[in-house]
Image (cartoon, rainbow, N blue to C red):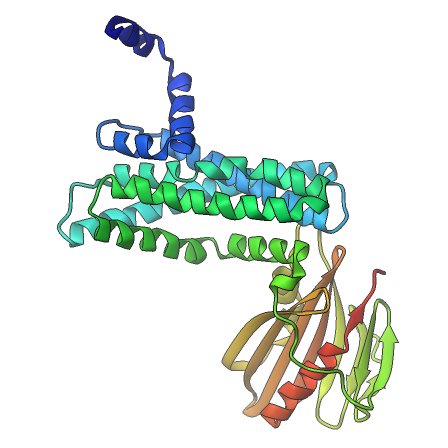
Length: 362
C-alpha cells in the first residue's frame, strides 16, 4: 500500500497537485490548513488569488449588467478585461495583507509565521469565490431564484471566513489568529473600496428592501412638476428656470437656492456611486469642505445614494445635497445648493422633495 502511495505521488504532475490543493482547500479546509506547516505552495497562492479575483469580477459584472435588463454576452470583452485586472489587484492586496500579518507576528514576537505562509493562508482561503460565477449565472438567468442564491452567497462568505480562520489558526494561537484575521478583513475596504461598493449596489439592485426607506413625506401642498424621465413635487417658492445647459433636465431656483435635475450617461457596468461622483465634480467645484456624509436609502423600490456636503464658497456658507439613482444605463441626480442656509430646514426640505421623486425609463 505504501509503495502504491509513493508511486502516485511520483507521477502527480504540478497541475494535478495544484488541482488537489484547490480541492482540499475548498472541500477539506481543516486538512488543507494542517498541511501549511509542512508543505511549500509558493506561486500557487498567486494563481489562486488571480483566479479568485477573476471569478469575483465575472460574477459581479454579470449581475450588474443583468440587473439593467441587458444581455451579458454583449459585453464579453469588457467583462474579461475587468476580470483579469481585478485578479491581479486581488493578488497584490493579498500580498500586502500577508505582509501586514507577518509584520504583526514579528511585533508580538511570534516570528514562526513567514510572509509566504501568511500569503498561502490568505489566498487559498479565497477558493470559495471560484463558485461565484455559477451562482451569478443562476440569478441572472432565473431572477426568481434570488432567495436561494442569496442564502448560498451568504453561506459562501461564511465558508470563506471559516477557511481563513482554519488556515491562520493552524499556524498561530487563537488570540493571534483572531487579530490576524481582523487585519486581513480590515484591509479589504481600504484596498478594494470600489469592489466593496459594487457588491453592495449589486445586492441592492436585486433586493432594494435591504436599504432603509427615505424618512420623509413629499411636500404638503406642493406643485407637481415633471420632465424627461422624472417627476417631483416642489414647494411653491421654487420657480423653473431655463438655461439650456447640457445634461440639465430641469432647473428650479428661489431667491437664494438652486435645484438642478441632472442626467449622466454611463455604461452597463457603472453603479450609482460612479454616477454620483461624475455628476458631483462640477457641482462641488469651488466649495471648501468642512464635512460630508453619504447614505443609501430607497424611495419605494428606487435605490438612492444620498450625499451631503457642507462648506463655504468665498467665505459664504453653503450646503449641497445630492440624490443619485440609476435608470437603465443612465444616472439621474437631484442637486440642491443652499446658500447661507438654515441647516435643519434645508435638509428637511431637500429630503421631502426627494421623497416625491419618481423616475421612468426614457
